[in-house]
Amino acid sequence: MDMEHRQALLGRTSRLEASGPVAARARGEKGFSLIEVLIAAGIFLIVALGIVPFFTQAIVNNRAGADYTQSTNFAKSELERLFSLPMSSPALQVTTGSSAVTVAYYSKATQTWVNPLPGTDVALWTRTVTIRQFGLNGLLTGGAPGDALAAGTPTAFVHARQIQVNVVSGRAGGPLGGGKQVTLSVFKTF
Image (cartoon, rainbow, N blue to C red; front, side):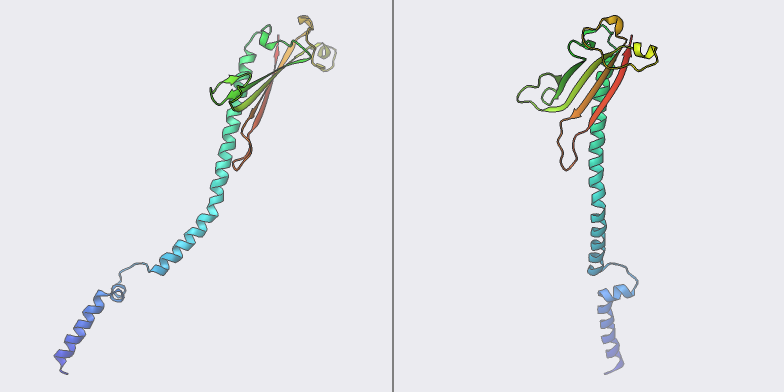
């Protein structure tokens, strides 16, 4: 074989190699092989599966926070409404026993507080308001306010009323946790 023929053959081979993947790497071109991509995807999957519980816990915590906020807002608004009433208001009177208890339900259908709850409706929240009246005569003699005064006690002996509002979520437990409960209380004096 003459020299020209060899160079022609080598030239063709060089051109063939120059167009293939080996020549691409030899020229410094970069890329990933299928194996490298699969290994990277596997590592990413392992890391992603390790992070998923954090997202689940964040959802649970957000739902619990929303329940606490909603129940606190419901309790606070009712407490403020009752506190703003005059002491002689019928809503603050104890008519039987030593406390007046009122229960209301937050209707899913009407999105309002109702009592009683219609038979087909669902209570999203339950609000219980308890009113107790106290005399402060015990404090004047160095003691404690004592037990709540019974209904029918003359108004001259009733010096304060305790307003207690308890709001409970109607949401049952589940993957996102159960409903929350908040109780707020205040004393209203003459």
